[in-house]
Image (cartoon, rainbow, N blue to C red; front, side, top):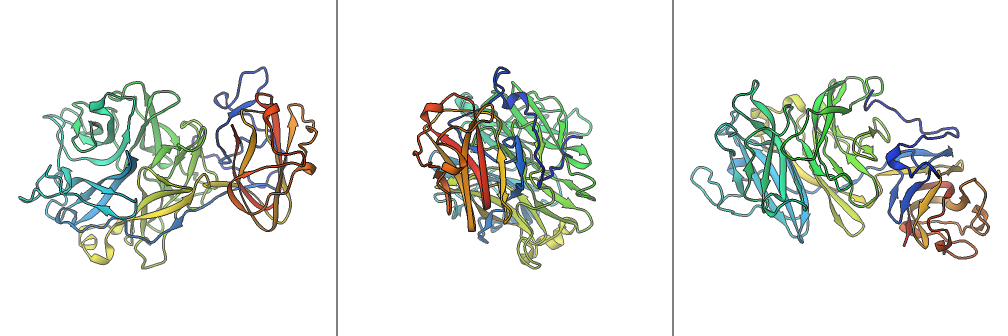
Length: 486
């Protein structure tokens, strides 16, 4: 069943059958890793393994208040949001509710914020939309669309489409209201030349509806537009559709859900999905897992190599956990759409409230101590999932790989008395002279790009485009990624 696969981590030697999208032609059945970064997000690089486990690596919470509701049009609550780095600045689009409009179809403002550093955010006076006679707002609009498609925006996910004409290079997918449909809510599309002035498409872009935020992008590999949102499965689940045209998606098909045995009485709220821009063939999803009995939501991690087939690296272990009782993030968490890179750090943003799911009513929301805030977390680049070995030495051998490069870099971290060694075999499993495990200079420490050296040096250029296997032995260490560097 889609989304219900649970990996066994401490595994005996096994053979992985790789999908066609991840393999070369049948004559050598090797994986083309080229000179690109490859992440250990699943078992694709383990043809055999022993005493190796996959672990989710939670980010570091900053505890900062990235954005707080401090305007009259935000008087009820903040809600779904998206962030991106765009032409040297940081941009945020977010939804908020006001007390005066609550709860009607005119209770939502679609707003904009900017930052120079990704930490301190300003709400500029744009003059695009008034609130109670005040035009000095950061509101882009309250309702949008022509007759027949005029309503608020809810659950908007923003993305940039560089291949599109100038007037539609910014796009959004969200909930919208359309006349002539029963019920009237469907997935709506919006386009903009600058991210500020938006146009809603006249007709729904997908004939389905669900609450919570949608995710969308244009896939760099296929050229298709991708849409993810909530569908029915094991309770609330995640569905996906792809289309050559932004204005016409087929209904979403189930691709990911909570496993009823491992995560009983739980389901998924929003996808918060995106193609990962810093490594080869990696897609991430950060859905909120709703625990019915506790009435709380925390943020989890799902992974994919193609954006279609998804799995849990470590089911049940949160990516962002709830804070301690009484903290601003102790009740319900939702990941914002997008991430920002700063050096070797990746910054992601989440919304948080001490209120649990069913406590989010107006009388509770308006209390200052219950405000929903946005906050920032920090990940080290590529360190979302790791292949780990503890006190007992672990090892693995990859399937045959084809690369382009002159040296091998590892993203690695070792603990006390820990080390990693790497060696090369040919496609038939024979050690390549001078590049065996015994020839490797042990790797220790913490580095995102540690070059592997052997007694004969580090140069691997003689093996470019020749299928080789990577052999790794490790102890008290975490291995996140590898790259054959041109």
